Image (cartoon, rainbow, N blue to C red; front, side, top):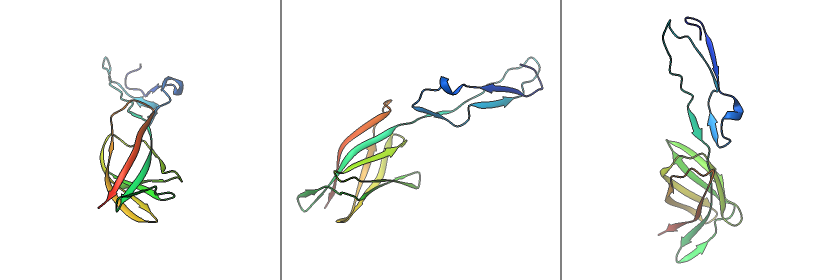
Length: 133
């Protein structure tokens, strides 16, 4: 590296695993004479979340076909359409607990969605049941 000059550092795309996203794979640094530099390339794990939804109301369980799943993450709403059999798909939601609701033809059901810690590229959350009291 040359001191006091711009030096390009780059991570090749093929060196990044497919299930990770990197904001920028190239940076320019200008180190001092006989100095060093720490260059960070933050990466984010890309995970897909899948599962099925059902709603229990008045002791009856129904599939909220063609409704919508909405979750609130950092004051932003992320949504997923719900398929005929109750299937849903979410992309890159960090682990944690989030307020969520199912909006379907029978109404709106509120619940808390828990995203577990996992290193898997696709996480199956199983069958989630929302209960309307």
